[in-house]
Length: 68
Image (cartoon, rainbow, N blue to C red; front, side, top):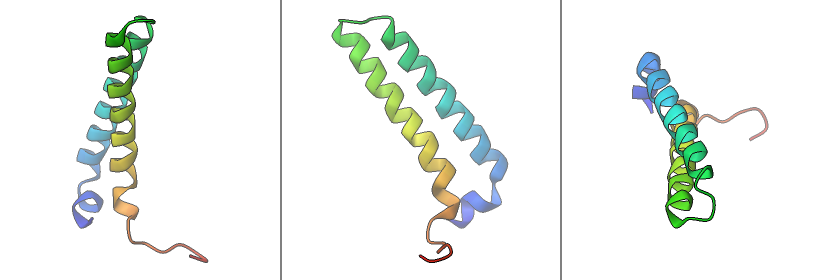
C-alpha cells in the first residue's frame, strides 16, 4: 500500500491506461452487437475499468475514515 502512495505518477499512468483501454474495448465490443466476440470485448473492457478503480483505491486501503 505504501508503494502506491509514494509513486503517484505511476499510479496515474496505470489508471489512465486501464481506463482508456477499457473504454475502447467496451465501445468496440458494443459495435459488434449480437456476436459473442463483442460480448467478450465488453467483458474484458469492464474488467479493465474495474482494474483502474482498484488502482485508484489502493492507497486508501486500511485507512479508517470518520465513523468507520
